[in-house]
Amino acid sequence: MPARYLVSPSDIELETGLGKDLLRKWRQRFGFPLAATQADGRTGYTRETIRDLLSIKRLLEGGFRPAQVIGKSTIELERMLRAISLDASEPQWSASTHRLIERLKQADVARFEALLYKHRLGGTLTEFVRNTLAPLINAVGEAWSRKEIEIHQEHLCTYAVERLLHAEIRLCKSKHGYPRILFATPSEERHALGLLMAEAVLADQGAHTINIGPHVPFNDLKLAAASCKADVLALSFSFAYPARRVRPVLLHLRRLLPARMEIWVGGAGVAGVKRPPKGVRLFPEIAEASDALQDLARRKRG
Image 1 (spheres, rainbow, N blue to C red):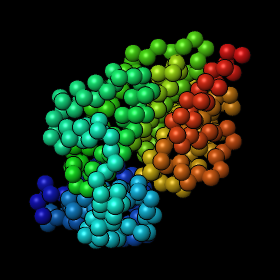
Image 2: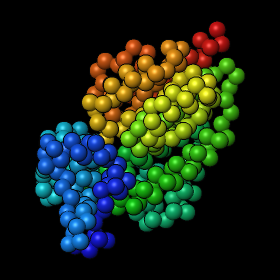
Image 3: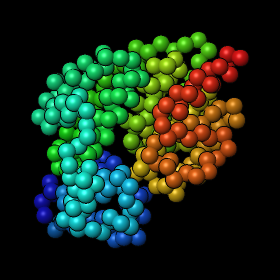
């Protein structure tokens, strides 16, 4: 098989957003995904395997457990995706979300970004994140599961949203007496869009925000939090992060950081954490983090 048709093991996480530790666990338990070997001895993953992994990712986002989907054939995965795609009916998107998805389908980057910016001008940055971006990101996932868009179009959306949010966050002015919040994801968590959306909302409401990005080792998180004089370390875990590791990571970070520094955590990956460590706050919804920001600001001023 020609090398161009294989994805190397080192690139599979970039292609799928699924961490190598998670894939190793699946391989040990379910026998999937398996790499193909070329005549020259090099190994990699076929495009069919990548497609199946992306389908599995969507099904997990839709509420399935790994044992229910891993090992299914491509046809079975597609059937399951159709079943969760709003019961094969028309998606219940707003008119504005429909228009944005149509721009993505056309790969019309300029018009997509222009439409995003138009929505941004329609209200506050917080409203833009909640009312435009959050529905858009969900719709992109649904459109992909319906095979209405390709993965490169999803990447286009992520790129455009990240670029706009970075620019908007730079324009935000922190309020006197509001906390300094350091945003990051821990090692092997490379999904950062949700983290950036949370930063945008809290920056818009007056927090002093510093984002050092994804995949940051523990000791670097500790050093960054200290050097930035952060009041809060804000973390995000995606659904792809191994669930069994989330609480141990939080426990370890809680021990590393001074007690005065709060740890706030969000993202789909924290759904399975029933009992957060003492001194760690979970925020399933960004609105809850907004309330916590105002409460912390009052305490700092008091």
